[in-house]
Image (cartoon, rainbow, N blue to C red; front, side, top):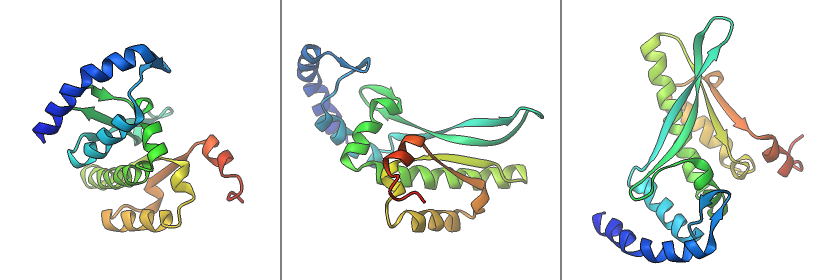
Length: 173
């Protein structure tokens, strides 16, 4: 709502003074985690999270064979925020779970639309947080998303980073 944006705008100069004393974190202006987490909770409700797609091209033919889902946050004050500016907050607060499920649903719906448009399936890749990798409901959520979107399982590619696998080596067999 508009009053929340106005409230944020009133608080930002004060936060900026504190942040100026704190400097930057990894080259990105440091926003206290509590503010970024509150903003992130509102972002989903306000449709500020956007899924974009980077084409995957087969080098031998030059043909587009799929896409990788990329997520951006269209922040009402700070503009477009890239994942390195807010995903650590999502990970730390647990917001990564609903966020990833949202991206998964969006990507599968887009893959279904591409299949209908082009008459052939195009693969779609979604990055998965290590937090989801160990959740009991993860497989059920993926199966449900595939079933409701009509996407065949082979079309969806779940990308799990090597660091995610290493951090949960006890469950990798």
